[in-house]
Amino acid sequence: MPELPTPEPDARAHSARLTCALTAEIERSGGWISFARFMEMALYHPGQGYYSAGATKFGAAGDFVTAPELSPFFGRALAAQVAQVLRETGGDVLEIGPGSGRLAADCLLALESLGRLPARYRLLELSGELKARQQETLAARVPHLRDRIQWEEALPEQFEGVAIGNEVLDALPVHLVAWQEDALAERGVGLSEGRLSWASRPLKSGPLFEAAAPLRLSPGYVSEIGLAAQGLVETLGSRLTRGLVLLIDYGFGSREYYHPQRAQGTLMCHYRHFAHADPFHYPGLQDITAHVDFSALARAGTRAGLTLHGYTTQASFLIGCGLIDLLGRLSPEDPAQYLPAAQQVQTLTSPAEMGELFKVIALTRGLDIPLIGFAGRDMRRLL
Image 1 (cartoon, rainbow, N blue to C red):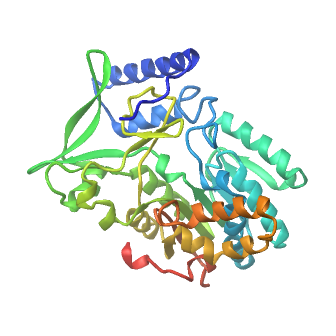
Image 2: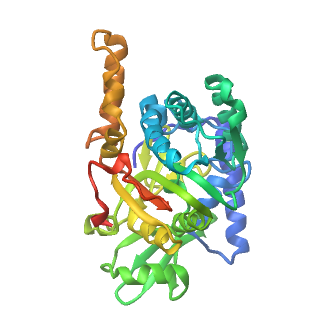
Image 3: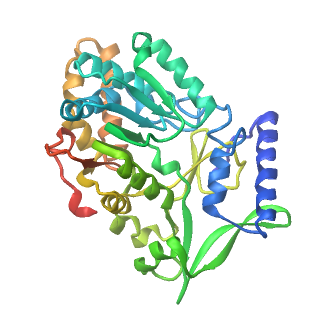
């Protein structure tokens, strides 16, 4: 584990309060909670979880940088795909987990330039602190579009148009499963001498068992199963009347996700731009993530009546949506503008950066057109 920066005293006190809440939850639950429950509290506990408290998460001053924070070209390119679908379906845009609001601002400005603004751009956000930051960003960037922007606290009962989730699924709670010689165990969290510690229990039945048992991995293999992410996709599928669910995140299809080289899973924590694997390090001050099993998402969408319309890399998707053309509108003779933009495009598309690890999946209902973002590289066979 790398040597991590030491939090300020008030941050340490904040983490200590959340640790007390976690300890109390474990004690109330008989000495053990699932890792999914631990992750849910560590990230979303009211007022104390990582995403519920007031610390900066995104950008250079936070713990990690997302694509919209990196470059406005990400949102502008994505908007071309959104515009294509809105031309067919009408309806709204629903962004799930809008972060700082940068993606919404960039997407709205691009949709405006394309003449395809939705009647409503809806942002599903549960964190009051993040909602306030989004409001600040959008008031500064798109004040003239204020009447089209609407915040939601729950998924709408019915929805038509485009639902977007960028780097949302990786932060949904995951269960941890350990494969043993002739059995399965769920790896959860208990207490050892009053401190948070790993603890396992036999896994013999229930939805988690049903998801894990068919995988038949080697003894000693430990990995995540994202029941919450699958549940979100199924709910979206049940409520989408016509349109597109577009999900962008880092991950793989099942065959690659459960590869022998990933025998200890993909769980990762992010603290002040350091990546490490200890989820018990200062709970509430760090992000906790896991890669996405896109095969499981595709199956969840199919169960909900959606069609797997496309699956590809972020690089191929953005290029299909006109990313290179956007860069081409800048003059190389203006290096102060062109060179940083070219570096941003490189980061978004390079196999060594975000281009190959990040994938894009399209799940649709009532949409029978080829999607521009998936024209270049069809990877559905890998799911």
